[in-house]
Image 1: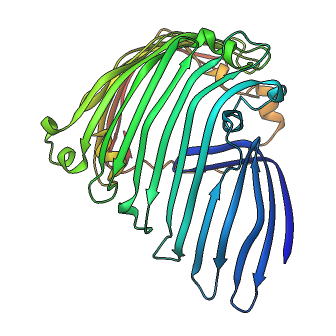
Image 2: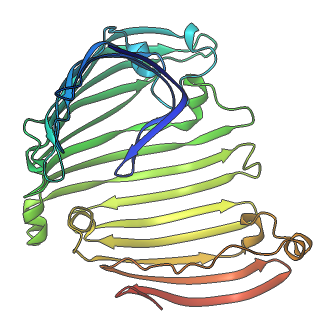
Image 3: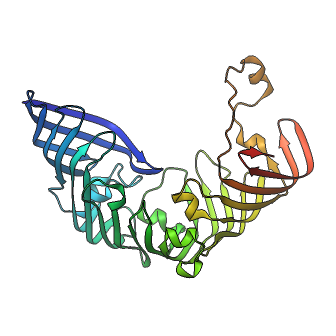
Length: 389
């Protein structure tokens, strides 16, 4: 029998560009019964703590040769919504123990099968939240009516047999509802997808739900109304009549300031429109410090490019600016510091991604760089055939 306890002050985990854990306080208590003759390890009393959420693990793992065989099940012994909320970055902080919370949560899953160079085990995960409510005692507004129903299933480890079904995601930020759903099947052979996102988030109210860092202010309005459904083969065949993709995303009157960005980032307008053929950037106005930018453009063939590596992503972007001050985005760029400290950083070649056909036009009234001022800059930049020109 091997008894172990592992403490990690901050753990972060990401896969495929998605962050699943961020600065999570982690503790693992693992008691293993070891069959050294057969290289089999059975989990006895095991407890994984992720912030306030505790996960029990049962089952076994064996490594008789090069393969790793396993049959593991995991679940949460507690069923309170508060423990689930502790996993959300920015929520788990000083004072979390005093948070008022209600609602139930159920979480369980499994990993079963063989892992080696050519196969992977089957896996599953179920998460259900009913009528969740969450409020810091020092803040005026609760998170209300949180309902989540998520199922992730792959019975045999074959990637194409993976199914994701987020049948319900509903949350009310005060009185403003936000809803989403997503279903994906056969992601390898012919990805079938069906989903929607709809809701409004008033960023002025974020400070009423979650304490912000000292010196941080945020305001603005996010509005999203998007539906999509179809399959990859229809997209590849350009059968857009068989694809649903309609809606828009808008961010208006956005302002963000913090200790790191005291001058603030402002975005009065950011508007996207979605359709089966492309994503259109209708308009973007933004400013940061002494710099400003306006942009319009579009991207075509986004879904095939994302799911199929050999599909061409086409796009265009037009940028105009009265002034861009590059000095604001550079640290330690003074002439005295640069002359005193030799530059020992090796130059690297930036590789242009394949299957991208992108053109950008720029019109900049004034560009500030160190003690130089450039005026009336106009030009085109193309990214095509792995070449920047």
